[in-house]
Image (tube, rainbow, N blue to C red; front, side, top):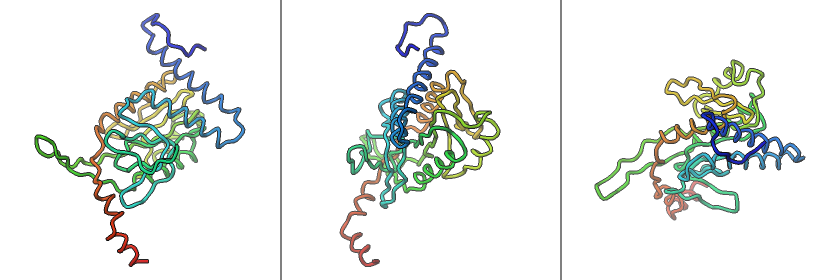
Length: 258
């Protein structure tokens, strides 16, 4: 299998080239099977998926493993992949690969698993809910021509990435029955299996959209990029809300309630 870029030889160049990209990702993910320790194997595959998203998403989107934090000091579960803004919003308390991302900066969150099945879907839903329930601030922005109003908060995208789908019919009726039960904060908006399957519910009516097997990777990436573009920029953070939590007054009030 040739994973290098080749000159176009026919009108099918794009389709064949992206299919090869998918084959290369599958090869990388399956090669991790020789890693005996499940935790180490999981970290390797997480990195493969992080590299995949970094490759397809513009630089305005930062892609990292992280924990999400809000101005009240609440935190999410550890999230395998967070897609967030770093142009206007810094990460906090970085320590090697351990970082906190302000909730306002988050565009999307993803869990990376060996397969997509009922248990892993529900697990991804719990992770997504731990992010979506966090408080997000939004303030107006002063500029040379006046003031931009505070941006309305968008719905954070949540998804699952895996090597394969466990159901025999892929993202068919069995999957859909489980998936539809994940509602509200635990909703899973999209998913991708490297062996050749993708879905999303980005349509306004929440209907399913499925990608072609041989080009599921590129199809999923372009649909995700389209969704992220629709979200535009993240809200301007109310940094005073974070500062107030560290103020002497709030510390004193907290001590009074102990």
